Length: 309
Ligand SMILES: Nc1ncnc2c1ncn2[C@@H]1O[C@H](COP(=O)(O)OP(=O)(O)O)[C@@H](O)[C@H]1O
Ligand SMILES: [Mg+2]
Image (cartoon, rainbow, N blue to C red; front, side, top):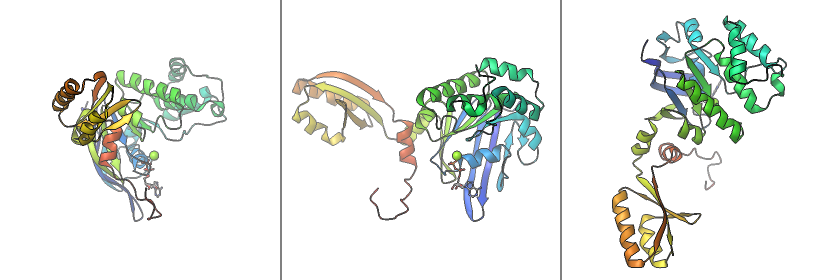
């Protein structure tokens, strides 16, 4: 078994004159959760649709489990499950009927349906259309697993879900991955990006602008470390001294972004001696994926051309 489960090489998709995906390359290892993070319109869904044989590849190549997406479509389809951004199941059929129908399409054993219903705790006899969006997503994920694929593609798995359902879906993604499933997911949700993928590719306007593990991306932007602290009492002298660090104030906490934590803490504790305040809270953290994202992607200009945002 190849260590690399998904390989994309210079993958491009053009619609007429418009390039939706512009020569992207990446490799996803077996057992990895790989996240494609990007704003709406970045080309995430188009990438997933190319990798899952749903739309043609304009140029470049891709392989799943060593099978060419262009030439071995049947083998690729057997290897993968897809949770599309909009569910493809039937509202009028029950959960069980939907899963049975999907199993038949794939020639998968019907026992798989019963197992998934039990394992995912699904309301077998309820009509799909009557379910909450959280349960709909669960059933859609179950349907993608009915033929026991090795790789699962999930297009925005937590979008349009309430906080609790999104959390449940993230737990499910992790559980599937712990069992060895390779997962390729797209998201524009920073919580997903922060919590799920082992590696992240940041996509913008059809291109991958950065790729790596969370820590690597955070260091890549070279934004240093955030130090958050509270002191009592806060004096105007202290605020004056901190000005050079461009502090931010939030719920009684002061945050500064520094390159060298040790230097900053030395300075803070020196000030503590001279000004006589107490440090009541102190934490340090790397920038968030959202910070990385904001740093590495450009704000699309407003179509009006003249407004200040
Ligand atoms: N069938 C299509 N015909 C023309 N343009 C398309 C088509 N599908 C997607 N696009 C365009 O390609 C770009 C990328 O779309 P998409 O892959 O859906 O982005 P994302 O999933 O990141 O939001 C968008 O500008 C979208 O309008
Ligand atoms: Mg999309």
